[in-house]
Length: 413
Image (tube, rainbow, N blue to C red; front, side, top):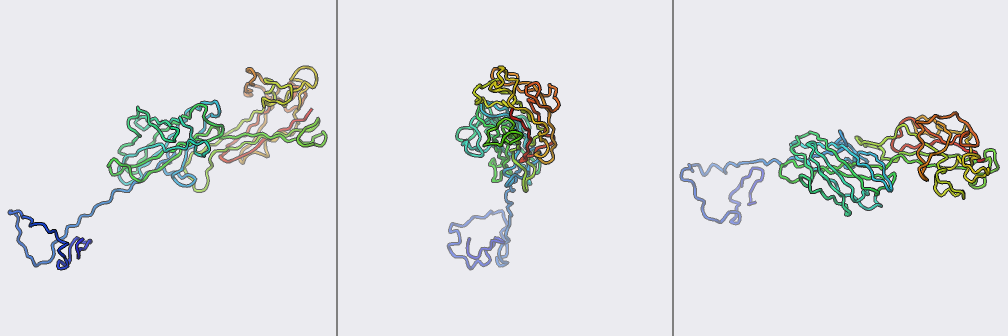
């Protein structure tokens, strides 16, 4: 600016400070002959005209689980989440899983909201791994549908039938919310059991109607678990009324303590987290069928199939040629524990059944205990006189991160 220029009022306060370099050296500007150019040249500087320019409105966008656009995740409102579950694992084609998210225009003016799936990691070693070929479908309130397919490089390819490259919610008033649907379809035979697969949806806002989305954006995670309740079983040999235990090899009279542990492995709600949708297991039922190996017997005793075999005669040690008599272990009365190891707030119950598994080829059919009649607690030496199947009921909610256990004993015959 020229010397003496005051930016607060737009005037050159002292014209004598101007130098030739401050003045346009061009010719005279002709006046309009119809204008009145009279005035007093000695009444001081002219009157400044000040025009205040409004800055563009600030962008503010919130994106979260259904009804919770301002949800807070483990670290911020950029990693809030909705967790759901489906069957997965090797050889399984998981069913598509539907989510509903809510986005809010948090600015002071109307704006357009664009929804974009974030690039994903396709490295199976990463915690955020998503298998290539995953399909994400976003459906707007007007039912317009947008399909994207994950590529091996982690980018998403939009389907050629999409109305526009990315879905846009047009003209969302200030402060208002909109729901949108997301369906995630994991590819066939590409998942592991008890894993999570996150899809990140990014929302962007254009508030100045210039067609360019502003710097503000917000993410939410739609996460699929391929099972979220983990079970594991341990076996410990104790003396019982047999000889002292050597190593973990049982002898007649020793007892085998079977402990079944359960854990809800899904994301927990901690610290300042709010508004996330969690996975809770309710009223768990655990079936233990000790006759499964009758469908794929192993006369060597190695039990290569890995099926439960503790309630049959595996090696025909009684010489009668039947798996159902002279069974290898018998139930120990009074040693079923469905109380002391449970998660907080749950209660337990045990139901007992006799009989043997039915088979489809070498595969045991799942025992339908709800269609069968349970028996009193008993102990015997055959599949008709002993308890061969246990159903443990954990009554209550198993919240994310909670763990518990149930226990039963078998005597080695």
